[in-house]
Image (cartoon, rainbow over all chains, first blue to last red):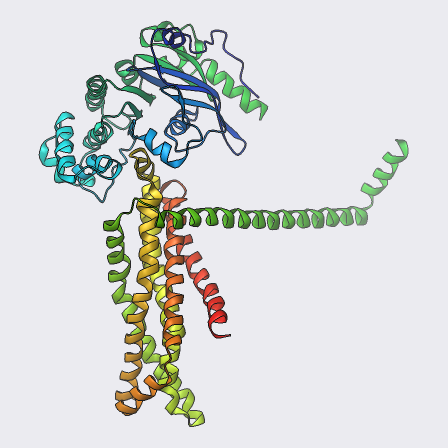
Length: 281
Length: 287
């Protein structure tokens, strides 16, 4: 049973409007993905202008991570189109996909650092293995990036297990920006961190994205983080983008689903939908 | 309608008929459940065979296509080959020793003690060294490959490889397959020598054989094909161990349970496949 469409549903009007004046770096059109009978993405539409930061918010199990994995090519969508600089990336062969991946940087939720490698090797990995750079030059860049994320150069010789969660996130960020990517993805960048460390990471994300002039796509539950790092916010609910707009409009979106989510209310349209679904089941 | 009701009433009011109906319903349910379970198992089996075939084809293809990672292959040579040497050596040594003892006590009943050297060398080179080394390596290396790759899967390190423009099949799977396939024959060759030496030790120092005649008998009976067949088997077994470890690790479920299950499945499936393929290869070589 599909939920009742919210009266205030907007289909990405803000960036559509913007899109006419700014070039679109990343666009998703009608992306669908199911796992067995579980339809996770039901036609997600999204667009991010060049050099802007878009944050996708939404509850657990709404399809945020699946959408991100579809863009990254880790999962193949069942239907729909994903365009980078106007070029379709769904169905690319391995070589073309590798070429596209070079435009990407990714900060994983748990850091996803390679635990058998030293910190500098982790950061330089994409440069050495992905781009064939000389390890000496790559190490210099890695140490630059370590300093850029506020860590001491001595950290370079340590292993991931020797670092705290916050330091691992910083290393993950350093790895994500080491190859100077055109698009950076952040998967729940502040999850599991204390509020101060979360804010530090947010600041670093903002400054890294600005310094690189990169386009950023983040997913998060953390509204403080979303407000800090976003130029635009999109809300995903039941596999569809139900609202998208500038971050300044978030508090007066006119969308009752967005209102419930950003204020963290236990009662509202989302919980009503859930109850209806439970009753129907 | 009225007559139906009457029949039903009659049927339900008769305890014997009620019991018979219940038995029929139970039997039908049991039959349907069993058929469903068999159907599920068969479908899962075909799905797994299909997925495994695709996985192995991709993995083998990446072994031959650049870019190559020689350092990683070398590291796997050391992990799979060098570090398995003590386990394989010990297994071969004691297997050779026990084989000499057992065959001596058995053959003594037919006054055929002189066949001990032949039995030891043929059994070790053709069967015991490759199969036991394969099984030991499945336990040591297959489990470790599955656990390592499954942990990388669970902690998103494999996804991270992809986002860093590195193909996980080339970086993780291909080096392990190459090392597994090439190192197990070397391990088995060493195991052959140690196993025969174990039999020699027992025969000379415990059973009173003459060293010269034992060695000459061993040498006379041994043919190239005996050793080669064992080494070819070992190559297959090494491939099986590495492929099963990689497959189950790469496709592991989430969390610690997923890693544990991947490890168990890798060891069990590679052990079973080693035993099955040993029979097939023996048929091919010696039938």
